[in-house]
Image (cartoon, rainbow, N blue to C red):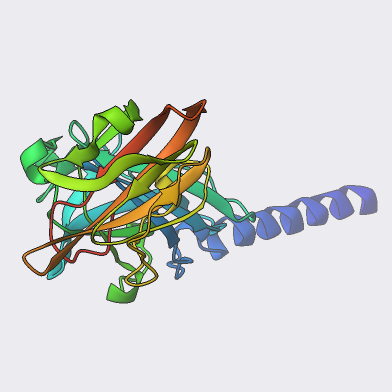
Length: 275
């Protein structure tokens, strides 16, 4: 009889503990937690596009991914970007304790909305024009309940799309490197060497691609001719009616001393420090 009573008591105690656990504790995903804010490390302009690179670390229980926005300076959240399934977050991800680098390109064909989810459509070139600055912001996001990291303007960064030309062959017979009606540099020779020269000034540095430098320096330019070298990035300044237009030329390879294969870009808006 005592054994039966003891078994009955243990059963009641176990039921009460389980009831407290299941009913007495809130669902952790329903608790709002301030999420870590992603940090934009680089904005890479392109022709009618901008690639945003950012770092983030989010291990909040209900974390769902990252939302990306862009717009003008007065409204950096004008355009809400969606994933390929036309849902949010823009980048779907799982929580992690590791700091991770992400990349996303805002371009023609990207899904976006300026209103609710029912108004999702695709970006056109007229929405992201060369020479027109845009401001980009990235948020950490959770779906249930719907929250995202707090917006501060300091976390938004500016970039300006611009035209470019890739994998082009230039030589002293080319005369100059020109894009969108602006001359980046003249191509010449000095002794046995190919040279670049710009009346508005030019400088160079070692690089691995055209996109390695995206914010042009405002000083340090020289009007002297520079010897063309492989894996070198030449930063140029074109002055037109007192306005600065910044460009850059990346040397992919040299063919002896007669020609070079290059990528180049120039900002079509004056005095804009983004290319």
